[in-house]
Image (cartoon, rainbow, N blue to C red; front, side):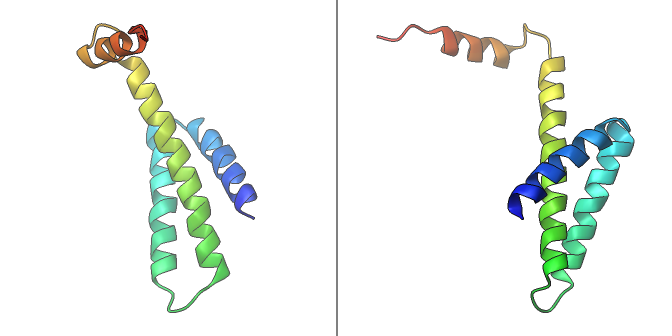
Length: 94
């Protein structure tokens, strides 16, 4: 079940990305908030609430990672943080 949740979350996030950053990202956040409300609104274990939140986390996590990757790629190559990382990565091993 966990594999299906993770794969489904990634596929759903990729689909929502076609809606654009505002609509797709807003939908991901809304699903995550609804999942939290449903999960914490139950007094005992409910499979639907648990797996809905797990699915929402998979969607939100994938979308957030894609957004941060795109944000990092949009930064200019001359940004100080990127040049420091490149210098560290190219440092020869002794």
